[in-house]
Length: 368
View (cartoon, rainbow, N blue to C red):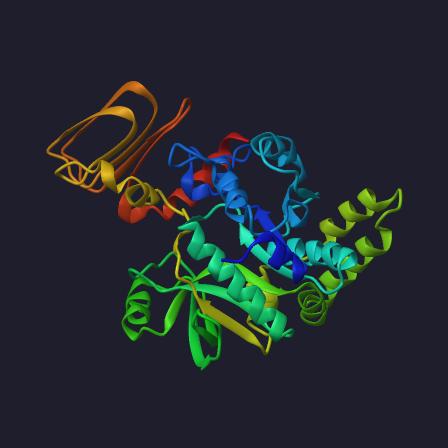
C-alpha cells in the first residue's frame, strides 16, 4: 500500500468536494446539515470518513476541502480532531467544474507538477486498503501518462437507475488494477437500460472519483469552457491581494454551473476508467440504510435504526428514528421507509425514493 512518503514524492494532492444538498435524504439532510455531515452508521460522519480514508495516504497539508462558505464553521467543528487541512470557501454553488478548476489553480500555483485526486465527501467506501490501492494505481497511471484523466468505476451489483454509468473500451496496461479507455458516459438510465448495462458486463457505476495532473485539468477546463476559464483567471490574478475575496465572489456569481463530467470528461480525448476493487455506495437514497444496517433485519426483512420498533403484518420496511425510547409501529405495510426527526416525518414507498428530492423542493418553496 502506498504511504505518505511515496505519495508525497509524486506531489499528490487530494480535493474533497463537500457540496450538494442531499435532498433525497430529507428530512435528515437539510441545507444547514447536508448529507456529508450525517452519520448513517452511528460512527463517523461521511465527511469525517472521507478524511480518515486519506490518513497515511496524503499528507494533511495536501488535503483540500471545498465547501460553501456558510458551512465552513460547522465543517471545521466536525474535523476538529483531525490534522489541519486546507479549506476553500465557495461564495456560491456552481457545481464540480468551478470547484475543481479553482482548487486545481490553487494546487498548481503551489506545486506546478502536482497530481490531483478528487473525492466526493458524501460516499461510503470500504475497505480502506482497497481504496488506498486504487488511489495508488491512479496516481501512478497519471504520473506515467500525464495527459490522462482517470475516473474510478465500480462493477455494478444491481441495475441502478439512480447512478451514472461508464462504458469501457480498449483494455490498457496497468499495475494491478484493470484499466480501460472510456467509450462513453451514460447519465442515470431508465431501469430497463440499466438492466441491459448490467448484462453486458462492459459498464461501471461512475463514482465521481478522479485523478489527473492539476495543470492538465486546468487547461482542459479553459479549453472546453472558456467562460469559466475567464473567471478562474480573474481569481488567479487577484490571489494574494486585498481584493481576492471580492473578486472570487463576483467570479463565482458569473460562472456557469456544470459538472466536470459534462464540461470536460465527455469531451476529452484521453479518459481512462480504473475498475475499483473497493465497495462503494453514494448514499443517495434511503435504501442506503438497508445496505448499511443489513445485520439488523428481522425475519420479515424489516430494519429499525435508533428507535423502538414493532412490525405487524409488515415486511421489507426500514425505520429511522431520533430517539431509541420512541416507539414506531407499522401495521400492514410493505417496502416502506419511515424517517423521523424532531420536526418532520417522512413516509415513502421504496419504489418512490427518487421523489423525495421533489418533495424537499416543494417544502422549501412553500415554507422558505
